[in-house]
Image (cartoon, rainbow, N blue to C red; front, side, top):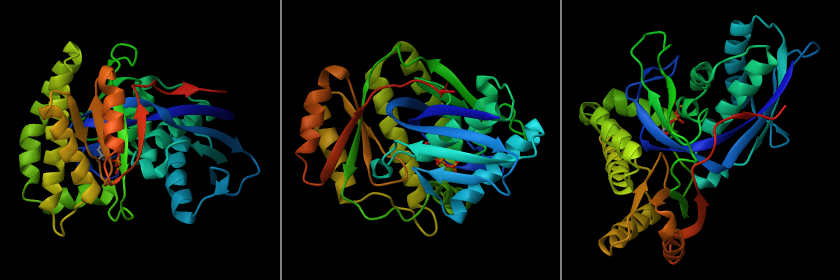
Length: 325
Ligand code: DP6
């Protein structure tokens, strides 16, 4: 009753922003991401006879109540599916620097879905694993797959058609994704809270819903044709549009800081000088830059020269989940 799995994190190019069902984590819109190499979570799960409750150890430390509860709630779903009645010990090693602005919840719940279902004796398909991971954190459903991934929003109330699908494998198209860390304070609003507030209060949210499926189509076609310019362009537009919806929320949600704007301006300048580079921003101040491999060094060096840039980490498309034991 023991298993171990590894999952990489992912970066969305067309964003998931807003839920139609908060409990089942069903999204308002489909989204598209790239699973990355380099930033991952390794999780082992063991269901044990002698435990009185679930235990969650993260990076060798027992976690706080709030974290434990999230994991237990997720394990309850696995217990219900498998009819296993035991509590589990969960051990996670997170290689996603929290400051990098990547959601460690994506790799975290993808790895947990694989390890816990296998430890409970379930043998789930990739699609079923994706739906299970989704119940922990929406973006985790995309990390089950490697490369370029679409989360089909689905239509069904119970969510059985809301899961990730692979568009292109990581081996099919290599591009560079640079995670640019800028000086910033602590993130004040979680993405879960930020998207909820936007759906409930922003007058601009309907504009998002009216146009996001068209963005998805453009991005899918760009991925199919490996058209970097078109993909980067729609990713940048879509990220700006997502941030515009939250500025209209009550109270407004603003993640950008001085450094965010400095990087955005720099990327636009690079583009004007003929270098195809684009940015995307999640629920935080850091910026992710997309560029072609042939320009990677140049873009990297130029970013490091900006006064508010603290660190730049370089990633490429990475693989989906794997079992280690
Ligand atoms: C801005 O997947 O972290 O990164 O489902 O509430 O856990 P929950 O949210 P989460 O939200 C990610 C939001 C985003 C865009 C994206 O990854 O698509």
